[in-house]
Length: 97
Image (cartoon, rainbow, N blue to C red; front, side, top):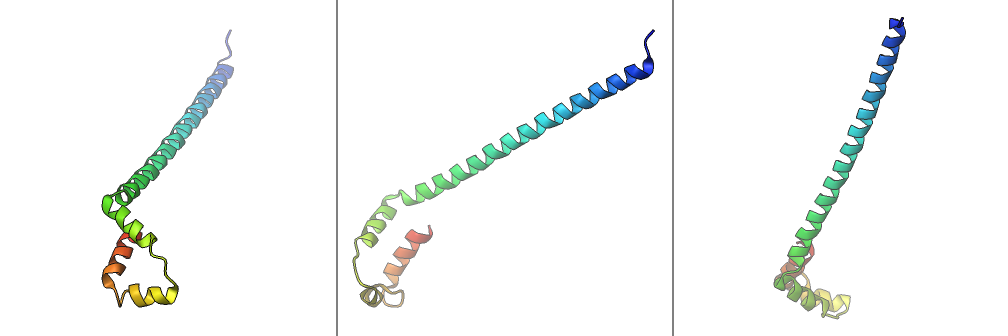
């Protein structure tokens, strides 16, 4: 004859084991999904920055700003925001976009 108390313990153990395995699989899947979402957001941010900086206007501004070779005092006299607000706006637009 079958001992029902032993059978109940075995079935309880199997159920507990199955639930632990299921929970572990769910956690693993959630971590994978979260990692993919993070990578997707990082790529979207990169592409937004790339699209802003890869415009003709941004490239021309970068070349113009990069080709200016002046000393600090001369720079402040020619391109400070109080003296040359247009140049300041161009610089700011390039740096903060």
